[in-house]
Structures are given as structure tokens and as C-alpha cells.
Length: 137
Image (cartoon, rainbow, N blue to C red; front, side):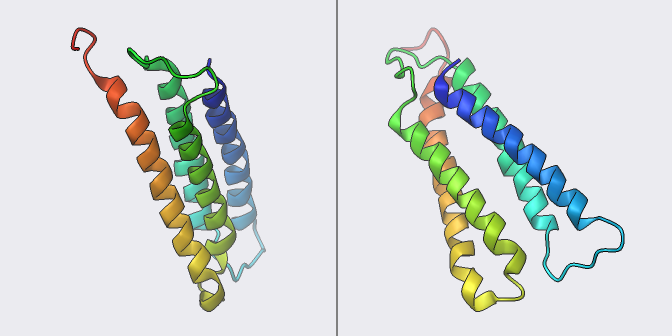
């Protein structure tokens, strides 16, 4: 299994653990929060866990074709990994406080969306050529 696939899958497991932890904290009986943790929970599960597991497995399972990828992954896939995770972390730290401190948190929040989109775009650019039929040249 390529190194980058392992990173995507392990990162996904970390997001799963902390996503469930965030949910448990936000729903703990008797605690009242002024911040909104449910969007953070959903992003940690949807983009952090599920999406990264799918990305890691697809990079591992779909062959590179005529140009084999370096054993440690191509530059564009590393950019996808870094941008997606940086965007998720920015979102995790900014979104809960968006409604309380909008002036301070709106910029990191918008940047997080930008980084997540760039990460997904880089992944699509990497995986798209791998989806050609086997016999096609």
C-alpha cells in the first residue's frame, strides 16, 4: 500500500475518533454550549473520515497506468492531502465560533472552504486519468 494511502486512511481514523468525541461532548446531558459543534461533527465524519478513507483506498486500488506514481505519491496527491486536512482543521477551529465572533472567524472559515475545495480538485485531477478503460490507449 502506498505511503500516501496509509496517511489518508490513518487520518480518516483520527477524524472518526475525534468526530465521535465531539458528538459525545456536544450531546452530553446537562451541558449547555454557546458554540455550535454539530457542523464540526458532520464535517469530521463526512470529509475527515469517509472522504479520506475513500481517497486513500482509491489511490491504492486504481492503477496509475503507463506512468507509475512514485512510491511515496505524486506531488498533486500530497497537495490534495495537505490542503484537505489544513482546510478541515481551519474549519474545526473557526466554525464553532462563527456565530459568536463573526468578525474574527469569518476569514479562517472562508479560507477553510477554499482549501477543502482545492484539496478535492487536486484529488480529482490525480484520479481522473486512472479511470480509463483497461484496453484504451
